Image 1 (cartoon, one colour):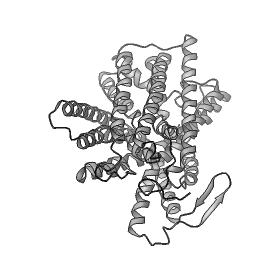
Image 2: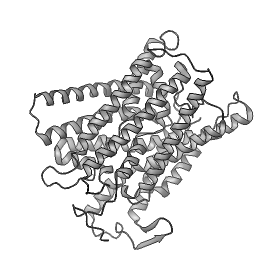
Image 3: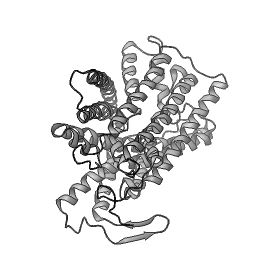
Image 4: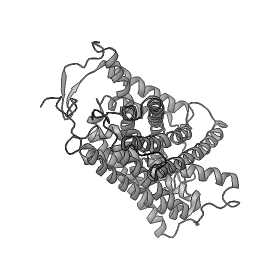
Length: 458
């Protein structure tokens, strides 16, 4: 079959609602699902439950708007990246702002996943240590070696040519996310059934008992931000939609995939968040698999952390492939005749199929993985920074640009009813982002007080 037969003259796309759903679930359900019990503990039963559902609906709604903005409004040409969609629909300054927000967030997430995976690797080693020497043993271990191991694996996976070749990895990662979420859920239910659940309340942790007034405020801001950002995947939505076949229409297929992805995510988030809070109460750990909310059965905790690691191997690729594509496309346009950029002859690899070697791909992607790994080792508190990046990117990428492109495409009159309520939604989400950013900055300042580079210890 000819490689250039799609409706826009590009390579044949083979994606379906199933592969798109897998990409979405891989991008959305991270190990953060296991920290939602902590978020609910800060907010309490009422506010926590409402916010979990509210941001699920907001993310689904704005994602649906974005699926209709992935073709040029004049030519109808498909866009292969978020920034291209913003450029064709809004242009100018919006294009530059989107580029900064999207790619800083993508790179930051890749660094964050390196740290998170190393913590899960260390948790497996510590779990076995606790089983052997008892729960009072320190069993502390450096995370750096595990970051290096994760980086070495990514050196190989990053040679995957493009997003279109990630189907198998994303499906595997999605299955892993179901695996560790289900294990965490099962362990929480078992803890409740044993009558060992913690104290809960309608308003969460109690001021004067569990936390101070200022801690309550900062923790609530961080919790709202964590929940809001946990659903976000707009920074890779256009890239995922670009993998879909043109027939049936890719925007309709993407809407189906989005509905499936968000529904599955919400089910797991609500289940793990609420049942995790019911199990641990106001003492819920930041992550009840790596924070040792559970010690036994140790082999099941190890298995869950292994699932997290495999999932993050795939999720890292989902977030880094758009970054790879950005520089590679720029190089192809800048030096179209360069031998350094040209792909070599096809190489048949058993099981994996045909592969075309590229020197640019090897050098650039290897450098990217090395830099993200070193950054993860240099800033062991980077997940606090990632919280800030998430706060700054959530509003423009998940809410503002989809709404503004929708208004522009449909030519919705200013100050009309539809225009007003869309803008109100945008402003409310902007306020949430700013408040969450303030909470993240407080966390960063606190972490800087004990900061030591290359000193990440579990």
